[in-house]
Image (cartoon, rainbow, N blue to C red; front, side):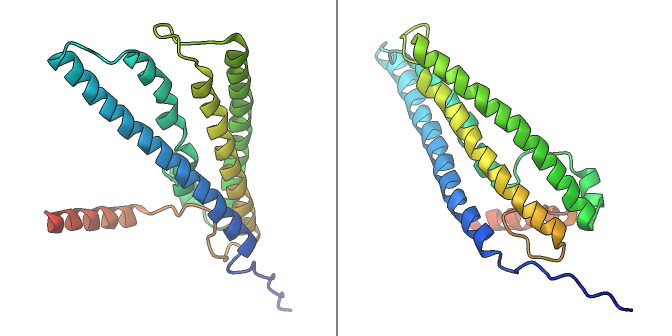
Length: 208
């Protein structure tokens, strides 16, 4: 007797796709903000060098500003990078496993990541709250540290939401391995990566 195939998941997954898109817009804005901080820090660094060299007048609290800005480009882009699958991961074994077993391993690793990021976000918020209550500041110019420390739990909270969306996507793929990939990064094979690098190199040569 022939088994009746299970009902496939909706090809478009409208709810998951909508949540992924809306969260993606927030992640893009966070990443853009991080890029703007990097650009601003570059301009401040140039002004610092020119002011010190030409006018013997360095920017006051320059070291403090650099210290406070580090958290922006270190943490604001983590969720965006997770959405694109840009974080370094050891996936040699995962790539060898196909079908439901593959998605089961992704579910397990995402659950572990959710637990770790949840703990980091919680204690990061406590660290910010302590800095707020104590009036913690930088050593030189005594600038308040709490805005910089607040970035950490906010960025981790966004990353936690991205991991939660990816967990739902992996569960969907575990139930329906033949379904379309939605809200998960596409892992390229070595051949696809090589072809992509060749194409990018060719495009750069044509522009030059």
